[in-house]
Length: 245
Image 1 (cartoon, rainbow, N blue to C red):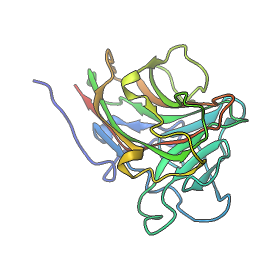
Image 2: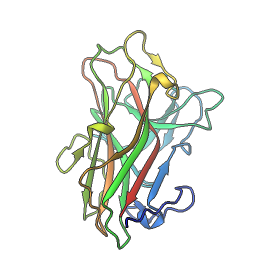
Image 3: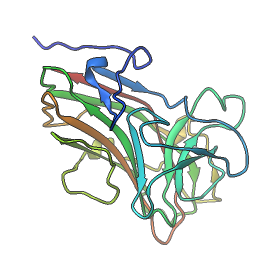
Image 4: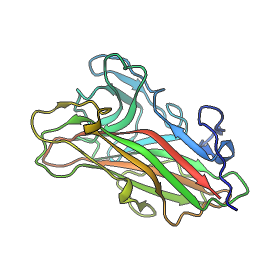
């Protein structure tokens, strides 16, 4: 009989200090709501970002500049190509954040994601992913789809880079791609928590995954600079990843 282990992320997920990742021995259900990200309000607010420190197990980089050293805090007012802590800059500025990007200009391609390691003695044969895709900025695009594309990679070696712009060894999952929900009109902020700007992805299986003891799994979202048009602000919130033997 299959055995499902569950434990809340806030309770105990073990993290190793060097090249850290989320360890499955800390619980086979991982949850991240990103509310620990900064929510300060101000013009062009930036906060230090270090891979696996700002968010344990999380990595972010751009094709043009490499690993990010900071992230911006915004309610969708900014259009700078960067990674963001998105949220309403009002009453709930502290309580509810989402993690995402705007890929305009210099970054070329932005990639961010979370890294897991199976440090148990069991092979995980089923991985389910749930999250909310949120649109926090509307651009003046021409109607072409702009998408946070999802992919995953497994390896027996250490994975410490989201590898923006690289497709080799990555498996795309279109059922987890988040495409902008609104476009046209004046560019500006949106409430990503509003139903019209939010899409739920529930228990989407990563087909074919067999995560053996000692192997790693990296989940990645990638945002490409959409040439010839302004880029939307797209984000991930309320992520849940479940592993089953």
